[in-house]
Image (tube, rainbow, N blue to C red; front, side, top):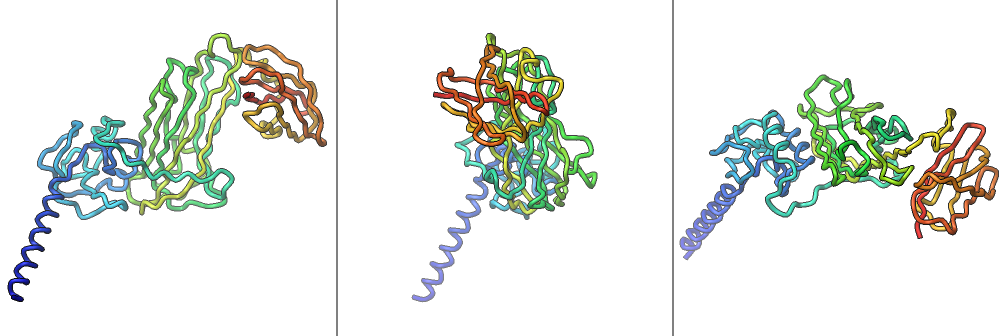
Length: 373
């Protein structure tokens, strides 16, 4: 009886072993979907960067066409999420290198083979002590035809990051204002801190044009961390074309919606995202004078507003007026509620975007106000 039980156990173990091996052999690679979550996107570049330089068994069928390829025998390493490094060998030649990026991740970007599993983005709350991404426009207000750079940096003074390996961002931007209705361009800053040790760094940027979405990823490739330093590491570039017919003022936004910053161990560091805002005018004289006060010297809230807007300043404000989207000047009154605090009554104003222009000893101030019902 005991011998029969022992034979049964061996048969059972052999059966499940064959099932496990068959399951591995049945797994399939879709070239570019390195984290095997159903879609090729910016996060795949981070996985590729972690596996860069690794090698293992090649696939029986090499190639990067968008189709399923049988997974080869598993490589020695796995990512933190359990996916094997063999998935990073997008073309199946047994080596994770630049051809996998060029021919698969870039070429197949955005393609899906199943309903995607959501990415593990890690946004930190605004006002927290977490590191902050910063989008800084070269000009806060421009006329049509202007070229504007928006620098990208990480401010980590309160929580230093000494083990940066890669970052992935999903972004959105205002459509209809850029030349050719294209989206922004992006380039790494020369001599950026991500390449501090002259290591090879790769980045990917895709924008959707009229859909108003974009994706960015930057990764190191040598499995060594980089300490985050002050200063820009990348620059978005835009060319303002035309404001919507009939309007004199409009606003361009570039917004970071989601962020994933990783260490070489694929630990995530929550980061506060940011939004850049650029006022666009038919005539810049509507907005500014030759002497402009610091942008943060005057605060306006809430936005959007309904009937009342509150204004806080570092100095007295005089001669207030609103400018609507047709360029019409509307005289208004600022009612003092403190030494340099004011209340603006917006009752009766039509919903839309307005510019609040005031004068001060520091120069002309221009602030955007959005009125809703």
